[in-house]
Image (cartoon, rainbow, N blue to C red; front, side):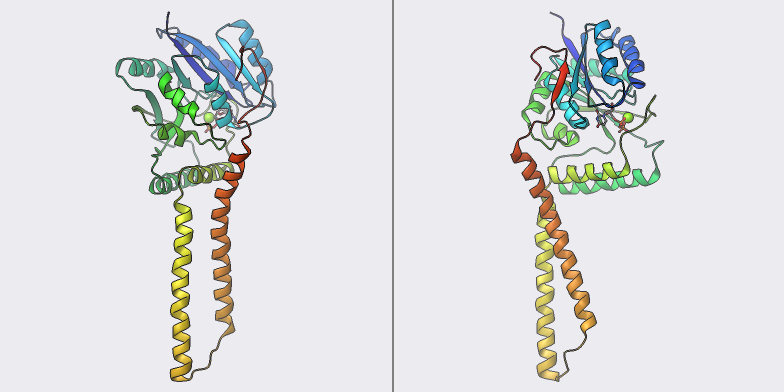
Length: 313
Ligand code: UDP
Ligand code: MG
């Protein structure tokens, strides 16, 4: 029996890009010596993406679709796609062709011939991106790599081809707070990195705002490092030591030199500083507690309303 390649495509409001993507994909996979199936995941789109998927699935039996009851986020869509793909190889691709379909052949060849378990991509330029965003993105990668034992590759995309072994390992990570970039790296195995230049999306617009990226990065740090907790204890310790030294200083000044204890302004400054630090560190602890809270509720990562896949998971 011929081997099967599953193409998982998370889609959120992609009615403009999706037809172009499917057309290009069909053209590319013709030349790859493997059977293909496409798993389109409609992540609660508000436009005609769902109707379009159904139409595409009717025209081509290789196309499967899964439709969510609301928007669950790209991570949820990727998870659903992986859960329901049956290929010996699985590739995750965006619908906007920023993940260049013409790399597929090369990825398949590498995974097949060079013995890697996954082939991942990273972009080497951040062209077409606001400079402020690039700056913060770089800072994020520096910080998280210092803090976490899991490696985060700067510019890594979710565009990645994996063999069954790799996918099954990923599916064992059933956490609710999913940060794919970290999960991919956490499972280990041999990964080959391909580099390419950033391209603009063909149609539609990016769903990421600066704010959503910032929240996403905090998620990554909290999900893969406990260093902030150590940091807050450490900060507390340092301030205890400073306070202790200050107390001795004041006592000595009063008893030995008889200077009056003066200055409510300095007192106010100290109180606000300490109050701020306390709130800050409680906030850090709170971040972890919030994640714990969500994890222990054990809610599903996504909910499906419709699909043409039998025994949908
Ligand atoms: N996406 C999704 N759910 C979301 C947001 C995005 O499934 O809540 C999909 C989107 O349709 C696209 C991919 O994730 O296929 C990447 O999104 P986008 O192009 O907006 O991100 P960028 O390429 O700018 O990082
Ligand atoms: Mg994109």
